[in-house]
Length: 85
Figure 1 (cartoon, rainbow, N blue to C red):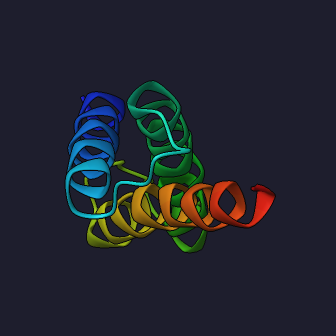
Figure 2: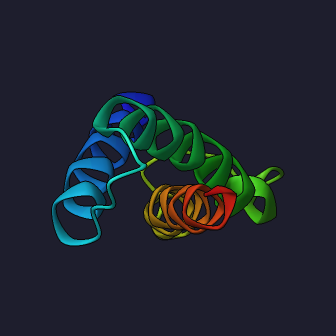
């Protein structure tokens, strides 16, 4: 259940990032894929303090990490794609 929520946060973050910060050199598919990947990485990092105390993916740390990872990875992609041209 938690991984589905992280995936949904990644998809939502990818769509929001592409809608508000779109560049001619960025693609929507790559933004969404990197955002979902960032949500998984951020969610796992957000869960790392709870590893010995019943790690549930729906804890606040996992949700905050997934949201930050989704927006962070998409933002990094947009900056790198902008500088590549």
